[in-house]
Length: 369
Image (cartoon, rainbow, N blue to C red):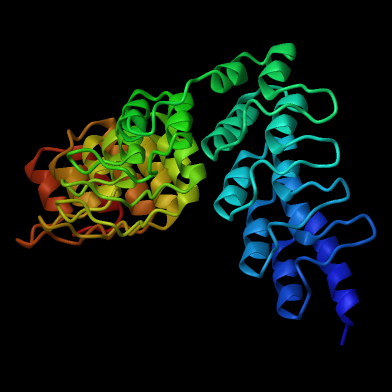
């Protein structure tokens, strides 16, 4: 039986390799996610600095101390911000890591994201997350007095400058400002509104959250920020739409990818009792269907009309190439080619009745009756 020290050393080695299965086994055997080596590295700190999100989640689930410090007296948040690991930054903020902690260099996470970043999109995302979480944009570095804004201007990081100079709305106006910014896709104003106190799940008169509005209008930058802060992809409005469900209507693969890290409920139903793959199949969103079937979504789900995604593609589609592709994709993903509607009419009979000869041929080849 390995000693506790040996287990801790093995866990740190597994962390550097991002070997999550090995890390899980070692933790189960008693390894400590907060144990540090001679260079003050722990599995938790390594996951944060290297951008290993799954490993980070594992350490948080097993008691990672978000207050722990590295050899520079910096937090995991500072390490992640320095490297522009925006998804990790968001997760650490949700875990409660102090946003304005100052390390031995006299810098906060925001200083490091600006002064050591390159102003690329991942650093812009990082800065937006920090601002939304309340980071002090005017705080001078302890050694030379440089503020994040001065650093961004010196390094010609125009997008970061735009984020840092976006004015915060009043606390009273913040909730409405959040919704309008999300709908317009202005991620800087979204960050400012949340920093000003807007509740992340604030809803408009129709019950729509900022994330739902961003998804509905395909505002990917704003949605990515909201997801990073922990917005709920399953919050439904008065029409039973959610941020995830409307991706099946819009067919946005980019939004689908943006929302997947938030672990949306793939079984959540819209007002017709359908899941996202059904409206996507009806509307001919080929790329969306091709991607969403890889998530494990139920391609044989039956909605309130008694229709599956395959039936909707046949009955409500045009029978042309996009719908032919969707039928092939659904069949390859396990759709039952003979599952009938509530009247006992199969997809093949519907295809024949609608004159969709190519789709009928595809279904016959798949063994449909």
